[in-house]
Length: 186
Figure 1 (tube, rainbow, N blue to C red):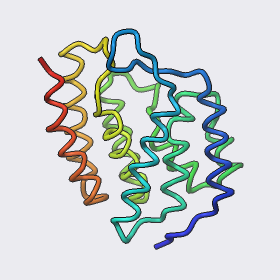
Figure 2: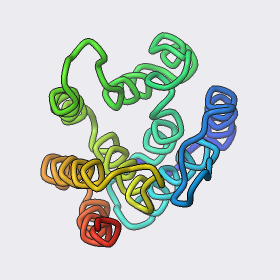
Figure 3: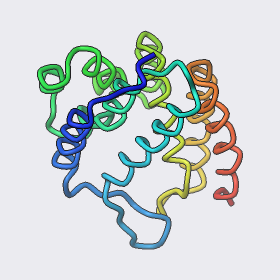
């Protein structure tokens, strides 16, 4: 598999994601805490870079670019066509699969649709979805209720069940993070 990537391409993707997510924040674990969203993007990229060093069969170029751009269509003004023009169809299709379809009603239905589309993509995209959830299973935002945390764990289990075959390392890591997350539920 491709274990090489162009640092210039990666830098271009990172600069684009940084600009697109500029000013976006999410709630930290402490009352009133706000964290720059690019921190989440970096966490997903770190998970993917670690997986690349452990799993032999990963296309690192595709995985890193899609990890950097995974939330751009969903959370910024960047479109599928923008990504297609800048990074090609494989990256654009991967990012699109990682994007929830807002035309579908219901949170679970959106997730099931996204998982179905992810499973039509290369295993690197499966890995990014698991890395995304791993990054989100550190400490929940201070304002989440126990019910929200329980729903999030159930969704994480669904992601794990559907995608664990895509990357052994991240599948195991996600399973362990789900167990560890229980400490946040009262």
